[in-house]
Length: 429
Image 1 (cartoon, rainbow, N blue to C red):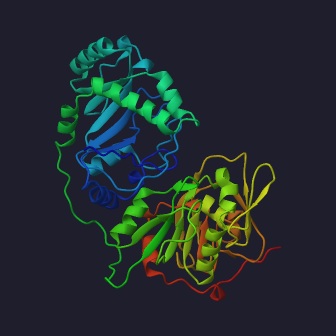
Image 2: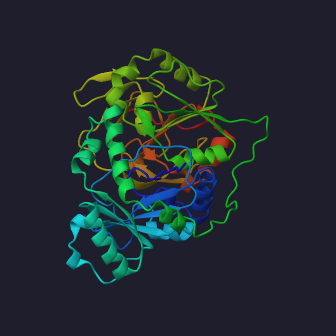
Image 3: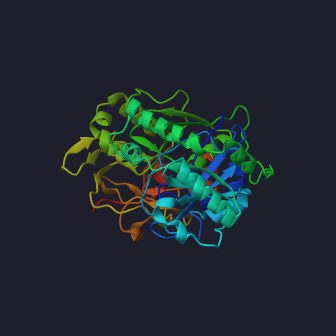
């Protein structure tokens, strides 16, 4: 059985590539041991045009991780300074490079004599088996690298898969059509031979806190149609450190998982399920009780909006939420893309001490309005509430890739948060 995962963050670039080299290699090795094939998707440095002729994949004999998360697709290729670079990542992981050549974007007479910096090719948009054979013969003779396979255009199938209405059996059937078309052209034996030609050395690159058998950390992760955007590397590292991760659904479950120590909310699209979330009063009570008993909570983006008093939608409707944070969260209709940002903490919390700098992607989707006194951990210099809290609850509009900053994951295990009374407050004007 072959397992494939494409590790990517909200910008569509590799999350592994934004880690330091040693952490990147460790995460890959730890997650790859139980699977047969890894494919990391991205764009090589030489291909930064808005419509690149050659995109990139890298293949390895093992695969990454157990967790999946949402991958927002874009038609454009993000700038290389956002996230990691696939060329560097291939070098770090000793992975061969496979270029994806879109044959609809170039004519055979326009193919350069100069070979791109890849170890093999995959053709996209071929017009039948005869066209594939002609291109395969020409490219292998010209560039002296193997062509591993191809996929036809199948425009109607791809369009339906990309449609918001695609789901259920109809969507599965479209994916099956793509898979069957791929099998017509793919040389799987040659692909596996290429992936297995390099050995990836094992070895630990970093240490997470050692937990004794009687010191367990149980983390409840919100995961359903409303909350599903996480950096999978973060969840992998928490489990590698000895934490037990259990998922729960704010849409359907009536309580938190048993023995929950810390609750973790990622982002997603809670605004699409606002009224359903509002009607789950049992979950609201469970979360308020956890916060009241000084249980730590970490929430990002849409998770912060859910934990506030109201979610204010574009039609001005005010949907009641959990009420654990004294804020209203307004959904911004003219929001832009998430952008890299570094924030210095102006107050201490269980996540970090005063003066600690945290890097992440600032979510412009939500504007937070405090209703009462609220702890502002980022200070007034950042033009709005970006990191805030109450008791041991920390909400952040920064999407933080903890795998690239593992020092903050230590704080998850330490759980030595300060009392709310010891932290200065921000008063609503």
